[in-house]
Length: 137
Image (cartoon, rainbow, N blue to C red; front, side, top):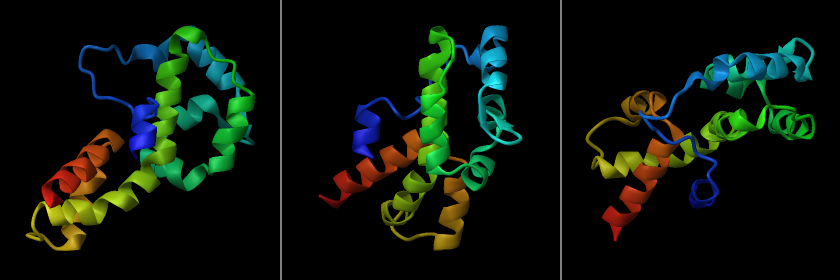
């Protein structure tokens, strides 16, 4: 998780940063022209929920997409972070469940912890793992 965080591959929560890059005309045109596979464009992938993306996209789809990248530079970083957020979510979520459970001192059943984690972002998962590591030392 630290590797991905250190390399800027986690979408940071920033209330001051505009989130309108997905609706920019140049971006939308380029994203719709970039086909990931039949009936799935980059624009579709960006608009999928995180759970839908996890079920419809495989790591090789992201890899192949990198070879066909034709996104306006001003939105490239935001788009990459967004796609990394989706691609890495299953990994982050899998590694966060038990540290979260330990951090709350096992006060909830694991099933309830899973429900709490559903609404969190990868940055939150990373912070939970770091906090639990600090708490354990």
